[in-house]
Image (cartoon, rainbow over all chains, first blue to last red; front, side, top):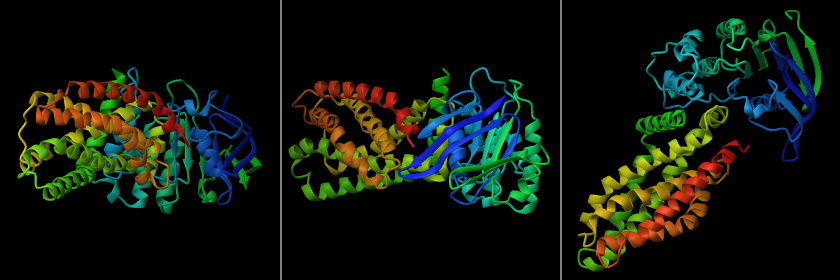
Length: 224
Length: 226
């Protein structure tokens, strides 16, 4: 089963090509670590997989369908926290979780409280997110995507504001996340970008290297 | 039912955000108060009550239209901060529910300003209603919705533009002109009792229906634009 298939995908922003004839197949149930220098096209790749951008040329399928029609199955954590500054962490997560829920969903799905506890935050902390440290906001942001209970998790620089101890906690959590069963029985796929490759390597099954918008290589790691 | 629940979720979030920041309400209130004070000094309405009744409707609606543009821009700026709009775009809920929740919140904010402003306006302009006062109950919601439904839509349209604060009035004011004329005509009719406000109210009803439908249908295209 394939999580995503990109065939000759080109993404242009004006005249700038962020991705050039990019082809790659991501298998479901694996963790992909995307590496590349700043401006290599890592974030563009994640935004395409998230359905937030459309390819200028080429074809892209995510979980066997169009990328921009997979909102229930894909969650994306970007550089920005995607949180309302004026709301508390719990209020932010409750809002997003309720938006994702539909009438027939299990009540146990995506508990904001559990997600916040999982990232080491107190769900009852009665402070707006604007008063949190960068690291805490990053954790809330991770809790937001975890509470979405996605089949495909896209993480853009998830460790950028965290200390080494917090990164280790987050990696353990992501390892656990892979094992959480999905209602449809499908395996979970994680695609993450980071500049701290040595920290994320134990989690990764494959390393995808990009340079100047072009595919360089895809290698299986020793954990695969 | 699920759709209404989603609209309520967005509305509740908007109210909570405004309750915490009070950006939109305070901005609108101070702006409209300034308009009332400045115009009451410029025209000396107490010595010319007939003239005051004839121009008061226009002043009130134009002041509210100008003031609401600040709030309308702010309501979308919140979605741009921290990339929240991307999270909204990735939400499986219907995009039009986000629009409707925001428009309803803006409607409530402008209505609160009207409720606070109306008595002050009547005192400063020494106004006495000579027409059908009950018609105000139809005019205020219809006129307010005409301003906020278009304003919310066009503020979203200019969201990614560099000078969006300037863009909104440039697009909104010409499009709101038929509604504005209908509001002014109906308000003047109610205040002076010289004309019937019904025709203005009918135009507003049609205007609101058309623009609400168009906005709901087109909002998904605007939200998904890169």
